[in-house]
Amino acid sequence: MKWFRGTHRLPDQDIQREDNKQIDDAIVLPSLQLTLDNFKDCLDLTHHTFPEINVNLVYFGHLVGSEELSRDVTIPLSNIRENEVQALLGRNQFKRTNDSKSLIKGILNGEAAIFHNDNTYLIDVYKPEGRSIQQSETETVITGPHDSFIEMATANLSLIRRRVKSSHLKVIKLEVGEVTKSTVYLLYIDGIANMDYLQELVDRINLIEIDAVHDGNMLIQYIDDCPNSVFPLFSTTERTDTAVSKLVAGRIVGILDGSPSVFSAPSSFFEFMASPDDYYQRWAVGTALRILRFIALIITLSFTALYVAVTTYHYEMIPEALLLTITESRSKVPFPPLYEALLMEVTIELLREAGARLPTKIGQTIGIVGGIVIGQAAVQAGFTSNILIIAVASSAIASFVIPSYVMSASIRLVRFGLIIMAGILGDFGIALGIAYLVVHLSGLTSLNSSYLTPVSPNNFKDWRDVFIRAPFWALTRRPTQSKSSNVVRNRMRK
Image (cartoon, rainbow, N blue to C red):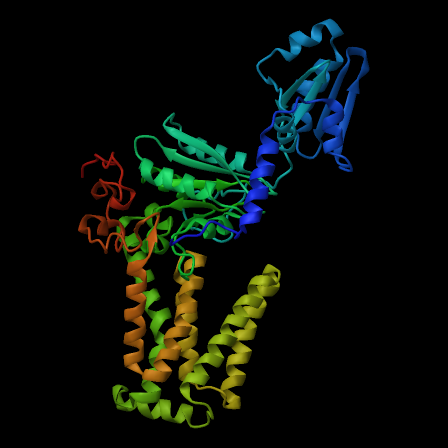
């Protein structure tokens, strides 16, 4: 089995869990005292009484909206008589419940419970505090929309609904996490998305057995096809326009409550090389930028490794004029090129990580000043050569060109492997490492579809939106990877 279900459970645990499930499934009639007993020692629970009309109100104050609670519940209950309570609770927004388990779950989900005589009702007044919609810090663009997702799933759904004003946009609600009971929403456009992909994704999420899932990037590690691969198999984004473009392309989009990142599937390797900026600029500019990213991918993978291979085994590949410069630069270095390169690459990664963890202004200072000071000091002390500093800096800069942070991190990790292979076997080691990388990528799948689509299997028509960004009039069909029954997305002519 290529993908795994979550935490491993022993047979006895499974039997105990099944017994508990049968107990939980037993219907217990709700009551005020039983509800309060279930939330014993929960000091954040609010219990409000209306003795004049024999009504009790129970809710978590930090999960409900004060305005919604006052407008729909407390004010109406304060201004009616006892014989009018039943008529008020008969309105559509009040849902009667006869199951204690459903009642407790509703309160935990931000609903207010109303107890009147022997009847119990729930009303949805969920509106927790959350940060406002802001610009994404990890996926910045020069042109185009700047709003991004936040940690509230309902707000994220509204952002997508604003852009997709169609009744064909469907939403499936799932639950994951034995303790946290986190809500997962799967979105798709009916008539465009492939239902086989949707069913596969639903089945995988339902089979997860884990106590807690905190973020969408954590969830996809439980449902991807090849969990041991360093490459991300699900595309994630914080940008609303990117998520909508995935939906229109026929993919499934997932939203986890509490996470600002949404994921989409199936995904291919080449999706991580595209940026929303490509579509908001002229097609020639977008094509140039996309080609530049593929060049940056080659540089960040091979530049430092090529330096190690050439300076260790293949001096004949260096032009004569440059050979004297390299020889002079390395004359004071006591380490072989492999150790020298690994030392500088690790230093660059330390600076990168320090800059990411420190406050923004301090982090920028550490990155710039630290890089300059340490690089210059390392050369003067004889720990490294000027040429290697250029190679390592070029590789680091090229890695920043890749739009996806998770893919950039994977590429940087692979780069270390190529450097070691170059130090051991030279150019043959680089060729061997790249061959293994291609074979590995060819064997990866995302929701059982090829990760290298549309190169393997090959589809030249899809290349116009992979290696280049063709004019919009030429982008007439949806990606073949989505296997949509409605393949035409653009009937526009020149």
